[in-house]
Image (cartoon, rainbow, N blue to C red; front, side, top):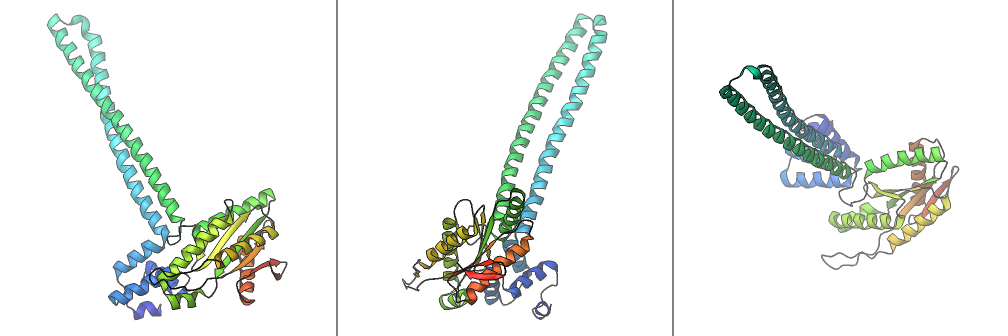
Length: 330
């Protein structure tokens, strides 16, 4: 609240959300973007707020896409309904004319009969054209709705992908973890969770710069996703922290994989492309936990986090797991 007043920023929900995340520093990408904007323009404008909110809070993107899709569907349906009403009215009139002709046909002269038949032929041709128009309208609507369904699916997928790394984001992770916990409870199968954090990343960023730090995060994400295996779900949990969900796996197996991932990351040689400078290597700390059936998901997540903090407190670049209330090295 104080910051908003000092910066003369409008106190609206959108800005509360942005600046809460900024002060919380849980999203380094957002912090960096805002700092760059302020350095360039000197003040935080409404235009900046809209862009930041759109770029970093995906539910707004989803909402905009849904609203636009609803508008286009309504537009398509209005067109179809208009053509359908026109055709229905024409059919009704056509039916009345045929009925009237059938009733009076015996009393018509040859000339009158020719005129009526000509009129019926003309009306039949009109009905044929109207039916074609309606059919084309239905085909167009079907194609438009199919395209919109595809668009919505793409938006939904985009909302679950971390923009920097290309792997699953926090939202996708939360959804997948909830589903995995429910499945583990129902089936009785094991479920393990690994939380991982890049060691000393803030000082690494300060030394080598945020752009290079972003490249390191991307490299780590790619290494974790590839090394975790096809049945696991790797996600960027936030900043330099990652989470990996391992369904149907023993605790000792998850610990072994975490150690393999730790060594895979630390074996990467980091070189600045712009200068060719060798900046050494990056290491990671890992925490592993085994799910207890019917356990609250947040309790499960917190236990994996506790193991991670234990690994960091013990000197980093290692794996810890929780057995009971004790954290142990893997």
